[in-house]
Image 1 (cartoon, rainbow, N blue to C red):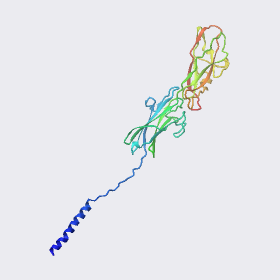
Image 2 (spheres, rainbow, N blue to C red):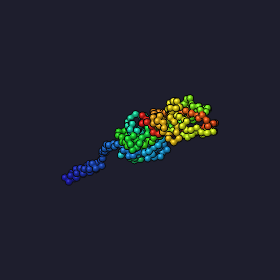
Image 3 (tube, rainbow, N blue to C red):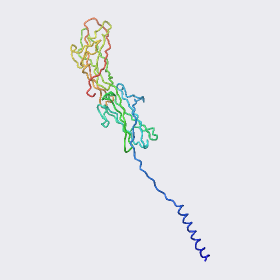
Image 4 (cartoon, rainbow, N blue to C red):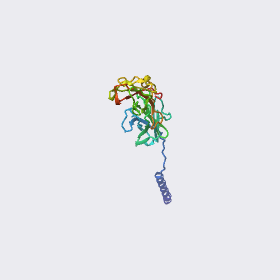
Length: 308
């Protein structure tokens, strides 16, 4: 009986050991997952620079008859990753005459739809938005209601973030006068029979009026008094035209009050607005001879401009 019991229990013991080992050495893989939400980018700052890369400090003075560039540099973050930024776009517009989403207009609104994205590192990114501005773009004061705004928007494919900077574009009242005012050869006692044209062109971004003054004409012999020269915006008789003076340049309302030479508008290119002025002279009946000359000074001032 003892031998029989021995042969029965040994195999059972062996089988139990095998089953126990197989249970503790098996494994399975489980997949872990989570959906991380997309955060909107944040444009933390916008700074404006001129075409030479110098900070404008919110104030830019354009040159006469000279197109220029304004650059808006933006810094921002995207909490997911700076590389999430898909597009950066910007609008530069006159706050008193346009708005961020308005159509482009060379006087008051410019758009850059593909700003340069650079310096992407971690959650940070930078962008530069450049605008080519016509010299006639309207002026605006940064502290008033008619300043310019550069609004920069970063887009990550789902959300966007924006920020802006204010900018003064100063008034430019540059102008030119087309040519010398030459009265030709005249006799003693003669008065001009027709006006000599001096064309005034507006090379700035604001309407202008014009003031003029001069001195006596110096001749080879003698002088011609300054008030012998007359001028106006129409070719009238010498006696009814404005009298040129030496000390007071504001004696002709037709030029210094209501000349109102508006600035150019909408893609002027190589052109500018202009108006004619007419000039006549009365030669004294005696006391002068030879060549006579003087300098007539034109000065611009702020004028009415329906576009302003």
